[in-house]
Amino acid sequence: MPERTPRPVADPRILRAIAHPVRNRILGELSAAGPSRAADLAHDLDIPANQASFHLRQLAKYGLVEEAPDLARDRRDRVWRAVHEEGITVETSRMEEAAGGAAAVRVFHRTLSAWAHAVVDAAFSTAKIPDTQRTIADYRIKLTKTEAAELSAELDAVVQAWTDRTRGRDSSRRTYVLLSMLQPETALTLHPEDDGEE
Image (cartoon, rainbow, N blue to C red; front, top):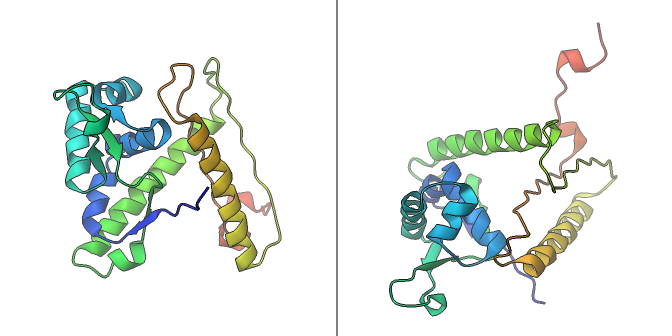
């Protein structure tokens, strides 16, 4: 299988599309399930179909999704797919150089940070969701910068293989989120109350 690399994007206007939580979820569902109708996405996200259609049109405006007429049942049937099935990589350092880019990047970082916090909070929640699996794992590994990049690429390949294998509409499956972060432990800042000092 050829290696697929996420498409780098550096246009600050793209952040307007992907910073919205519903549009971000739609992109995630298209990645997990593949081409979908607005009604399918509305069901997945528990939103009205006209709202799903609006957000799909917004994503199309920014070149992130497109119609897939070859998959439609007839001329009135609208099926949508992600333009970049392999995903995108947001190049914030290049975006900051564009007009209005720095402000857009700050908003994007706040939105992404809030989303990551929500994911972590949900993972630690004691609420039970029937017929689901939830795991939390952390590891400490001694790596060079090159080895860290290799490990990240290997993990991405494993997740991509699972995505390819399970993509499609199947009512027995639900969309899971896997949040992976690899960084030097020295990048973490402990709060004074966490350091064991009185």
